[in-house]
Image (cartoon, rainbow, N blue to C red):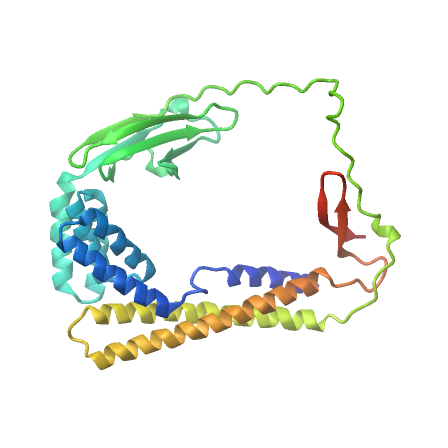
Length: 338
């Protein structure tokens, strides 16, 4: 039973892992449409409208060509830090693909943008480093290693916040210029939070919590009849196998979709070659989807069999679902049997 429970836990983790639910065909089509719209808007000078479309296309189906176009768009939009980071990412990718033209262009843009970048440094003095301190920049947690580092940022308004257990929260807004600005935010020592108010010793009439009907004592419930365990082992094994297959085919589908997208942007590929890559991505995505649905069904059956598996003797350990009812609560409770 312990091995079956472990298999169920692994199954649920694998079933919901990123990439297992990739739908290559629809993602590739949407990514291509977003890319074309974003590039057209960028060429028309509408960078604020085009850049988000290019960014979403890159998120759906990552590709070196899309990333390079996104970097150009962000530079035109005035988001120099984003453009600098994206150009920097293109350089090694272009070298791996033996695209020296793209690598050289990206290197030139990285060198040109570096002296123009605006930077923001968040400093936490020693006396302000209280236990459990969490520093955030626009709701994103800043790592300890990043504190005190002048990080490149796009121009705009940022909110720096800090919190810690038993301390009052603190926040400050800072505006950074789009180019060649240097800003420093210092986090102060957080003040202690006021002590919690003790509840009154005598509760007001009518405020006493309503009693909840307790679940019947497990020892008073007769043990259920014995049921064979092989269906649980079979469904758990099938779930693991299907989930593994869905994960592998999902990753392969993403790779095929990326190859198709790059080929669609490369005039060296014929229409027949592009269609072949598209068909391969579509087929692999379909297989991944079918395996994913099967893994979900098998996982649900395995979990049900595990939770409802009766013990073979009254003294054996097991789990039961029992009703929980009261004036203000109703539901089911999972309890163990000793």
